[in-house]
Image (tube, rainbow, N blue to C red; front, side, top):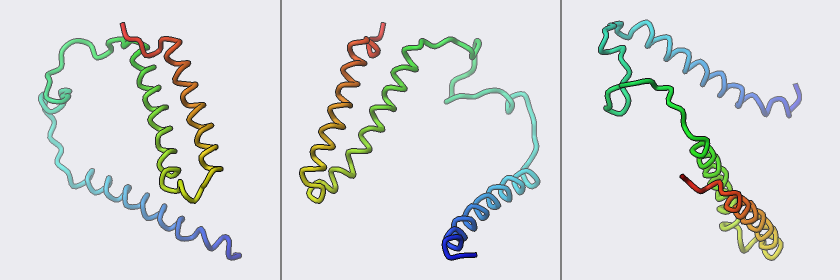
Length: 121
C-alpha cells in the first residue's frame, strides 16, 4: 500500500464503526425492547390530533413549488457566509464574483415573480 491509500484508513474505520454502532443499537433494541401490541398503541397519532378521514388528501402543486423555491433560495444564502467572512482577503475579484452571483440570483427571483409562482389563490 502506498501512502495515499493509507490516508483513507481513518475514514474507512469511522464508516465501519458508525455502521456497526447503528446495527448493534438496532439489534439490541429489537431483542431487549418490550413487545406489547394493542389497538390504541397501533393507532396513528400525529401531534396530539386524533386521526379522521383519509390521509391521501391532494395538495396543490403551488404548495410544493413554494417549498422548492424556498429551499433553492435559502441554500443560495449559504454561499454568502464564506464570502462575507473572507471579504477583505478576496478583494475586488471576490466582489465581482459575488455581484455576478447575486445578479443571477435576482434574475431568477425576478423570473419566478413574473411567472406568478409565488401567487397563492
